Length: 357
Image (cartoon, rainbow, N blue to C red):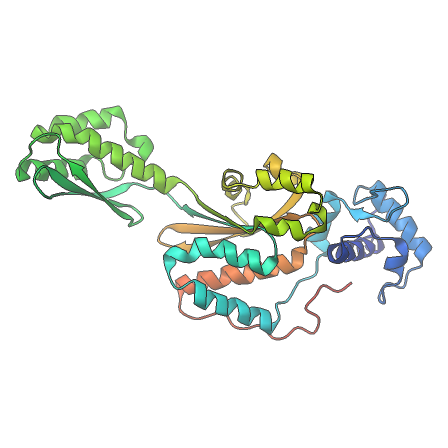
């Protein structure tokens, strides 16, 4: 059976209408659209074909049709019309960025809250480091009697320090020797490369400060593991309850219980290397907990060896065109904020900012 242009046109109209209403769509509704000019009987036959082809589903015998995951996928890949942000929307986003994103450390934690508010759906933000993370420099500074300050700088210029109580008496010369040995032996190593053999080699060269080596190496390994972990922020989970699909308390509870940081932390791997924006519809989601939802996610660079990812989780009925437009604008604004001081230009007003049907 051929997927004709007319079938695609009808499918797009059905998806657009279902996104707005959350109600199954009948042939008379589509026939009444001003730009359709196709009889209700013809539309009914085409809808039957689309159902047989797997692009539509019929929840009940007497009900209209709703899009299937395959229908949403075709809609996203081929049929979805671009959504243009209005000037008011762009100004609101810029004002939010000015007010909320002044500090680099606030970027990821605030991003999920802002995106959740502007989409009225749960949103998440993930920060991850790109490339190898290693220790670039060790520094041991004598402090008060019986202690020293260990300072570590990573390859991404993250600096951490720790006050360590000396288990043995070490002279300043012993600490300087240990510092030199650490910088000569343990820099530019990932946590996986800090092996027992490396530890033994450092210990043999550390002289009287040898008892300090396990303490320092353990802290260095802990820091590298922390730097390799994704930082996850999740906001707006309760916004799902505003969606018709989740008015059933049992269904809503099941999703809310499964929507946690552990599930979200696995999503960055789902973005293809050659794509900044990706949409996963229903069963396409890798996480079992998200099989009945859709996820729209995009990545961006925030400097200092950090890469961010922002995503939205919601019903498969979500307005993909609007959400992808808002996420794109948001992440482009962040990238410009950290790349250069200029704000993104405001878009020209769109004659019809919503999807046409």
